[in-house]
Length: 333
Image (cartoon, rainbow, N blue to C red; front, side, top):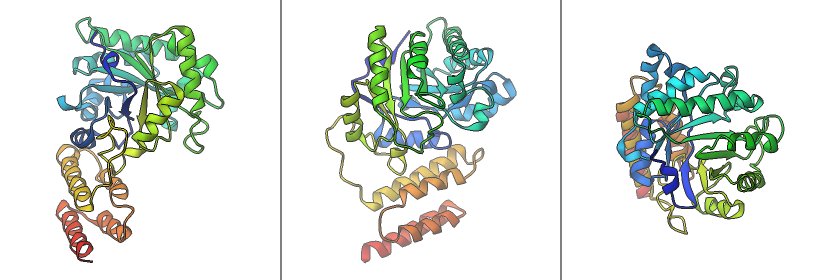
């Protein structure tokens, strides 16, 4: 097995998989302007991938470029047979690893017994992990792929003492810990002391599973500090990427880069928009792209007025015209 996880620097910095955010278009932009140490796809239904008709629709969510490596396919399911089939398919597509989502609080996902609902059913979680490993083995000519899990510290309450040892006993390559319970959603601050607890459990068990901390990480400097405080091997950043494809560009430096000039930020926003239309325009709602504008167009005089115009725009030509008009008045002011 080519386990890329073992070759990463420590601490390493990775991008969170986010539905309708880290799609193929945005990942290409991030790869170009500030590549993290590991990329994840958006999470994809293993149940869907297990069925040929649904698989065709979902393949766009698994599209990636060589430049994005190492790239991990994130899957969700509570059905071991479907997880086997999906992991086999992802291995055949050439992914570097498979991650299983056991932390998503979305009710539609939980109704399927997947996502955070897996915390309530450890034996089902164990079966799904083993099915993913076997499927990846079957789809890679017996070479296998490293299997990882992303989860939370508990469901209604903290369940680290029971939940984490079970996961670690499955010899995962990596385990991402979102430092909140399912009940807490993202409504309270992440409790990073729980990440430290998980690291201590891993060490006591003598496992070499990499521990990745996640939750409320502001930037790379903050990530570096949290890694130092908790002893975790890597840090996952999510919301900090909004409007900032350059987030990881200085991850090997001690200080964050200075803010970019607006013309450069808008140029990349338009590049992102064109890439979205090229890759996903026929299959995804353009509203997905427009929500990025709230982040790109923020924190400067006139931002609100420009955002309103961009949200109402119907074509890329209109968007470019609004940006150029704004810049001409902004720069001459």
